[in-house]
Structures are given as C-alpha cells and as structure tokens.
Length: 187
Image (cartoon, rainbow, N blue to C red; front, top):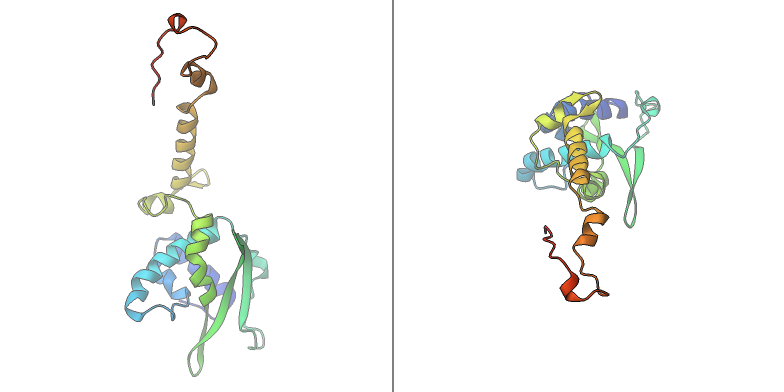
C-alpha cells in the first residue's frame, strides 16, 4: 500500500474500493477520531460510502494530483468541494506522521467525518442494500447497479399514475348522481 503522495493515495483508494476491498481502502482514511475497536468496521463502511461520493459527484483532475512530495513542506491537498444543503464540504488529503521517519497521505479527519452527510446528499439511495456484485461489474460502461436503477425508473414510468387515469377516479360535481357510472380505481 503506497501513500507517499496524494496521487498514490487517491489511486490506491480507488483501486481497492472499486475491487470491493474496503478493508484495504479504509487504510487510506484518517480514522484516529474513531475508537480503535470500531475502526475496522467503521472504516469499511466509510470507505464504501466515500467510493460512491468520489465516483459520482466529485470530479478529480488526475493531472493535477501531485505525484511527488515536493519539498516536503506540503501538508494538505484539496481534491475538490461538494455541495451540502448548508454550505460546501472540501474533500482533502492530509500528510500524517506514522513514525519518526515515516509519513502517509490519507483523507483528512474533516473529510472522513463528513462522509455520512455527503453520502446522504450524493450517494445512491439503495447502495447499502444491494450485493457488492452490482457495484463491481459493469456492462456498456455502466455498473450493474446503474442499470438496475434505470430499469426501476423505466418500470416506474410505465406503470405510473397517468393524468387520464386519474380523471376517471374523480367524481364530477356538475352531474347528478344517477348519471354516473361506477369506476373502480386502483390504489
């Protein structure tokens, strides 16, 4: 696992997450604000959610990701900003010290704390209910979960409520009751 530069961190996270290896992807998140005993399960959950946030609304210009550590003074790097109902949330990487001569780039604490809010706003609504198979396979450049969502929309439109059907279910007020025919409406 390489995390020496922002580019390595983003690439490593996305490769692990897209392969469904969320336990590995969690190592790219700064989780020190989470109790040590909860980090394995919370890290997996948060990494999965962050994958959808990065894959969907966040545009990352990979050409601008630093692939070196420069002169060693850089400590933060902002990947982008996402809108939230009350403002915006920057998505940032931070360089953290792991040992005296060892450091790593990870998604910073502020970003990790915001993952749930960002997911509620930008994540697919049913992602946590579907099997990983739907997210790890694609067909014609779309992941299977996207095809499933498209199918749901199409079927919803085809079987949805149409204005001409609604009119039959409302009793006109200008006609006498004896002239009306009974119309059974589905509910």
